[in-house]
Structures are given as structure tokens and as C-alpha cells.
Image 1 (tube, rainbow, N blue to C red):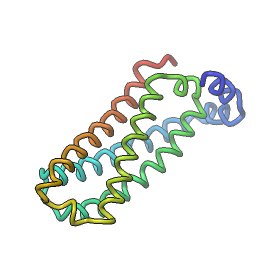
Image 2 (tube, helix red, strand yellow):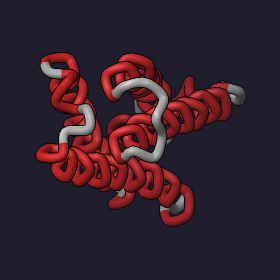
Image 3 (cartoon, rainbow, N blue to C red):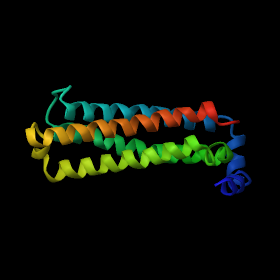
Image 4 (cartoon, one colour):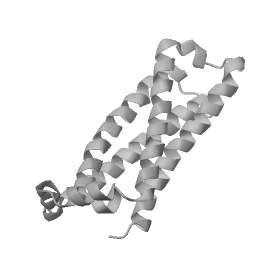
Length: 162
């Protein structure tokens, strides 16, 4: 990964990102706002599954918040890519960045499976005592995965040498 990071750091695209003074702060701001939107959406969904909120059904809650998750993750992919292009040797080889990406893959997998499951059988997600325990456990694990994405992502700033 370090070889690729070194190569990317030597590209003209990396030089443009580094020399455009406003670009990195703008990308970081958009990235962080999207993180907040994703995390808020995830919390709203998971809290509904866990029964802490009662607004609508699980399917209605998913319909309201899942699009925010996928839209913001797509925006974060773009902004994150620009940030990586600008400082590839800072992020790509870092253990913290790699853990963030691992947990992002896990969290997205949970979100995709949840969204498909609700779309296929919304009634199964309602307060059905036989499935409630499994759904609650999945909600806790998914929320934990999204928390790990945020924690590892934030940790990059404190552990990676500039």
C-alpha cells in the first residue's frame, strides 16, 4: 500500500489538490457533515428497531433514512477520494484508515442486508417476538460497526504523522 501511496503522491492530481488551498478544508467539511447525517440516520433506524422510538413502522423509518445513508456514503466516497489523492501517504498505509475501511464494509453490508430485508418483508421487522431478539442483536452489532467507522476515522487525525 505504501508503494501505491508514494506513486499517488507523485501524480499531478495530488499536486493540484495540495496546492488548491480551499479544497482540502472544503472536502473535510462535506465529509464530516455526511458522517453526521449517516450516523444520525443509522441511530434513528437502530433505535426504532430496538423500540426506543415509536415513529412509524420499521419499514417507514427505513424508507425515510436509508436513502440518506446511501447518498451520503456516495458523497463521502468522492470527498474521501479527493482527500486521499491530496495526502495519500498520510492515509492509505495507516492502520487506522484500513480499520475504518474494514468497518465501513461491514457496516454497509449490514445496511444493505437490512434494506433488502425490509423491502422484501416489512412485516417481519415489526414487533414479532420470535424475531425481535435477532433483530435487536443485529441492530446493536450494526450500530457498533457504524460507531467503529466514526471512531477509527476520527482516530486517523491523532495517530498519523503529517
